[in-house]
Image (cartoon, rainbow, N blue to C red; front, side):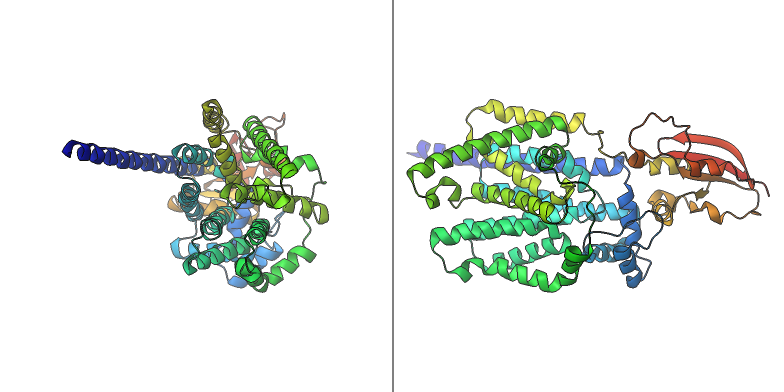
Length: 508
């Protein structure tokens, strides 16, 4: 009858509308996540390592000089060489050569990878399970993750490696779990994984996870060995051929560890860092441990009644693939720390975070009790709001210092700092636009005509000295030296956190 057909059409229409509304929710979440990244970028300044990298990628110097700065640290006082491969340095340098060498342009270039990462993350969770609750909680956890917001904005390959790792996992799932083994998928898998390894060698741990899961597929399906393993083998061979010099440098020449090995560091400290605070890190570690113990119990009970290859953990599904990669990365971190040097920085393994988020989200989604689901969502929102300004390392307020000086109508600034700092300060768009001239204090001419200028001195910066009981007016020895110079008159002293600003006038 006509009315039955009409009701069916109405049902289909409502279903489609519901799907459309859900997609708008996802896109809104992605927009919020990108907005948080951008707000952080605009609100906070950079750290010493970022000044260092920015000096290295100077688009106005020769490639040989870039190489010298990258690998040998030939750039001034207390500045270390870069620890990651050269390719990201040169990629950034040539992009800045096209769009303009400035602090802001460097940030926007790196921010672009975060934009793509958000959409790839959405594609992964949508590929794993087309369930609104699962996609919603995993996306919320991803976009509000303070550690990712902070670290993906730094002048490092982190944001690009995150993007490549997500693409690598996406195409692995597509090919080996969803069985969409088209040639184009293999090509994208090989390229994304090879780029991930080339930009950040620590991500070899993720390729190890892929190898282990392929071994399960090989044993379960009795596939041809080469048919199963040829993509990661091709990746590994190409990576070694293209990066053997860097691998030699890392394996034999480089030794940068400065903390003793501590097993507890790799558990509670990683989670505390990964989720932005001790409180929320503890919550997520407890949830992860609870579901992991439950997973172990189920598999052990199943093993007692069946053979090992039939335990649920060895089933070929996305949940197990994610868990195997988490295990592989943690195992690689521990092995490297025991055999060579202690890995002290969780930021080296940012690619763990989306894997942990996805696995926990899958387990929570399986739980029919909504109070855990709601508790985690509320907790991550409160965590990102409450701990937003709780930076592990306080950033030096460089933009504030520039604005204070420029507002006094002073265009010439002398600093007590290295060429790295001066280069960083000179290449803010704010400094370029206001024609601020920044030089080392040693270059101040004794017979310079009488003109007002500012002297800028890093004064017990919190990033170097940490929290202390010092007052703003306490002076580092190098800042005290400023007052001993008889070639200029001191008109005003301005103290702000990390800086002493001295407004002066030449005696000549």
